[in-house]
Length: 220
Image (tube, rainbow, N blue to C red; front, side):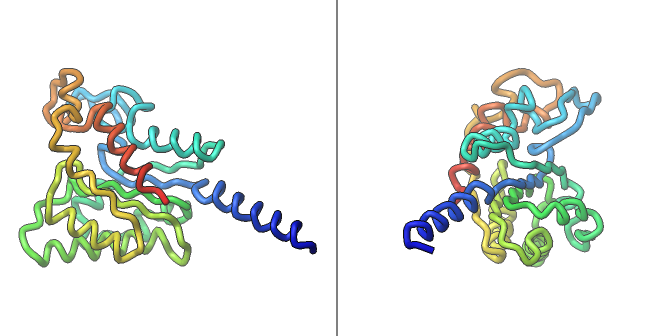
């Protein structure tokens, strides 16, 4: 093979790898990531609470950005794992997240922490870190996906430190969004009235856009 043909082959291979590097994207989170309709809290959406439409939540904004960058839409899986947050110690990752593990994502975005009970001791913090590390390792397996772990929207030093340490442990990229929750304009209640305070306390369209921007910016 001539030098020029070899160079072309190498360049083509690099472009192919970059284009296909994020063809399968896994979003794991809580109600900020996805929440189905719930009449008793006056929420009728089936997307990230409290975005005004599916297209405006951070999951769909990140997906749109990836699509525009690659020229093709990635295959996406979105899962609410609030049950992991609330009972992470002893959580059966292999059984309960079998589909997410078998999805074999090229890009994993973990957006949890808000539903984790208060970490009152160093032991609590260590248990959360260990559980999140185990979760990410199970998703990662023997592959090398890009992993993004974001901090809590409602900043919490102990939880955020545990998330960051778990992220570092698996070679992921930590995305600190703690400043977003300090800006009232990022809340749903700043954009429209809600009957339920819990829904109103979620990021609105502006907050969702800010979360998406931080995640996209952090990508290699």
